[in-house]
Image (cartoon, rainbow, N blue to C red; front, side, top):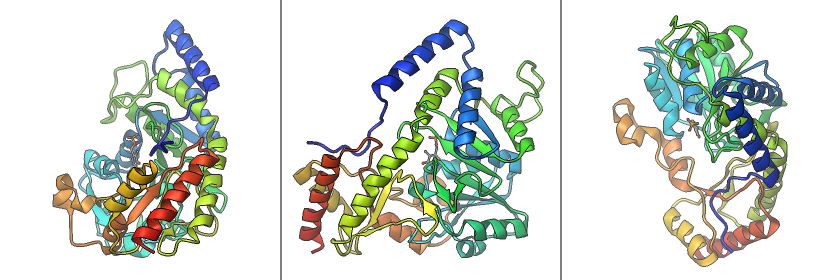
Length: 374
Ligand SMILES: *Cc1c(COP(=O)(O)O)cnc(C)c1O
């Protein structure tokens, strides 16, 4: 049996509902920013206990809109070095300069000390990324630091649907949170994104930005430098239908994660990233640090060739300050980010993962651990 790196999970019922929704949308003729977008926004806001959500065409668009509202043009924006390219791309497209900060090895996330080290007089925003769905206990210290310096805290919550820290949801720790519904994310709409905020003013601004900066949906009066960031009704319908599974998906993933964590305790040298006290992850990723000196490519190859288990891609294998296209923003080494990028693996974890698949992953890990780590 093959255990794949990732699996998109739509039940038969969900597919039928999505198909019916597409029929209804085509018959009704409202194809973008219509009633399904509103339903999706309302459901997402409720699921994350935030007052406002604005649907857009991607997570990157949600981030760029938040940064444009803050106003980062010709200013610095702190991002972690170990994040997806999109976090920095949104900064660039909003006219800002990405400044890479180092992270903590226990959470893969920014810390207040790490951010403070790279602040400049022109820092406009800090983008906190909840890598793999873990929420760092540094969130409150980061918020205090940003507030005291008049800097906006934005969350890249692309991995963090439904995650909480001390009962508070991802997306609610700063000025705004950006979620993605790319197919591999916890829930998907095919393509799509959501900006959440507790500010009514920010919600209204985001609605203007997402539709070409128009002052209203029905006029051609452009008041902001917006773009074509609308969410189509077909994507919104799929997103709303999939979102109904969020709790069920998280419960299954947490169950799998607890089996992984229990079994890894017997494999010294393999160090899983565990939730900090107060954090409840969605286990979008299950991340494990390998000991120094272990060849990750070889480890992954053994697990696949001998046990048919595909490990998913890393989060992330090459830090942003080493990416060719971002070279001009690199400014010296960031040792922790470089180390964790080079040294971790992710275990396959799916929203419908079966017990026999978990067994197979654990047999593979145990055997390859014995051979390569001992
Ligand atoms: C997926 C992702 C994004 C971008 O989302 P899109 O919907 O693909 O634009 C941004 N940041 C992180 C960390 C992501 O994983």
